[in-house]
Image 1 (cartoon, rainbow, N blue to C red):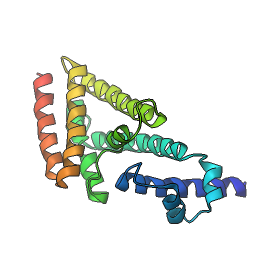
Image 2: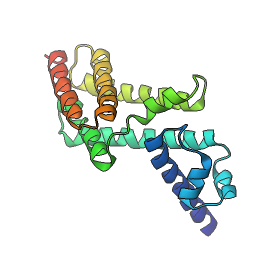
Image 3: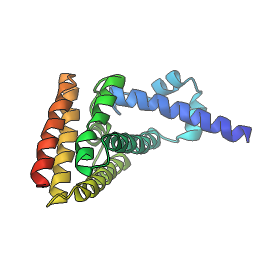
Length: 191
């Protein structure tokens, strides 16, 4: 049992370190030696948990997918019981992310740009976007949108655009502007 706990703790430390580095510097900007040095593990230990950098990247993206979806959903729920309010309130997740560590962009957009079209990282990225969009369609449907798929696509574009613009400008005001645009879209789609 101790071995399993130690393995889990070590694997988590490696993954947390890699996540911080990949988010700030991109997938290509971080080498395995940097992850090893900053996580404080031996090279052999890292390779016991992640046989390749691609495996480490895939684990990072899966973890980020789960974390980011949970953050979006929690922000939406904090906005209240009305699905229309939740579609606007989910933008608080972007503000929370900015307040924690600034805008370094969307890790999924970064991964899509930095990896080949046939890579596992790209497949995980596409899967994340599809998962997010399914959720947005569900909330848009609950909000009474005449065309829930269209509203979900537009809200998704606002999320992606706010993350990209936030990366460029480092201004959290872009999230307020995206939230305002979302409020208008929700009103237009749910009349």
